[in-house]
Length: 391
Image (cartoon, rainbow, N blue to C red; front, side, top):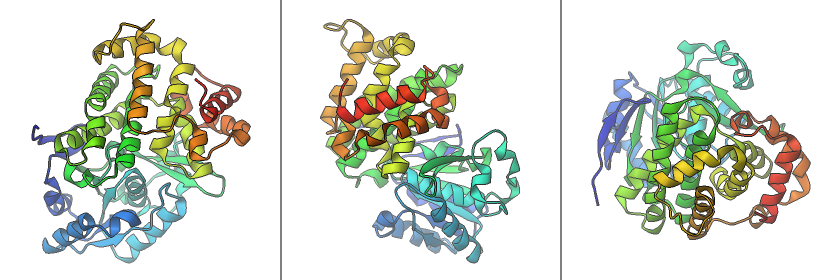
């Protein structure tokens, strides 16, 4: 088992390796923080890793405080409460600590700390981002504890609008965390089913970025290697949670997926976003279930790319009519190995809202990167097939 440690400066300053969490206080001080607010979720707040992080910051002379009222699909209300705590405590930076939901919420708190307009004014539509007072965005140190969303290298947050039952994306280039700590030891306690779902989320990011029709060869290269790392290490991380090499490589693959998807996402996310808002289901699990159905629907447009990817992954070619068939078979086998359900019905989602889901998916920003511009009716059909488990 290899010990992997490195410092990178793309797309931001990333410190990778076991035990690097000990550098948290130093990272905060490097950014000029004296009173950071650590934002996480309720489940992590009671764990030793968060208590240790707070203690290390306090020992370094930082006046650190904790905010942990974050839902699994964070809402505008969560963000607003965090901003209230931030301002009341006269904080000067944010430590985003946790899975994708905590990181997204923390980045939104950092964004809103110095704004005087409501959150939805900054939704990623048109040039809304130019309304933001850049000087009011707080510095961010990001510490992911799951290998899935890659939010630590992203410039946006996905926040649920409860009033309208939709997810909105809030964006600004300076929402990109200044320092990232990828410490695999923080992910070793993840249960196998969460490791699996978040890992499949990372796969969806790399895969949709690769298949997006937009021109970005650098992102394509990152995405292809990200898929290879997941093929090699995800099952290992699920089977043996203390495997630090596998945990490190999955954290890296997660960051790679989020770096690559500036090229675009697609139908998996276009469907997962409304389903997460309507059913409060786990985002990574939704992408994992939807994956083969969306791949099949896009086959005509992505077959050549998937053929190339299949060769890079050294997938077996014998017994399949094409590299696409072999790749789809691998996805299905991986899902079965990881105990990912085959249908949305398995997680209590039925097809009664198919028309609404189809319309929401067609209007979702992620739909713009899908290889085929599906309309609402086509998304409804893909959704219904995923509910029924019919490939």
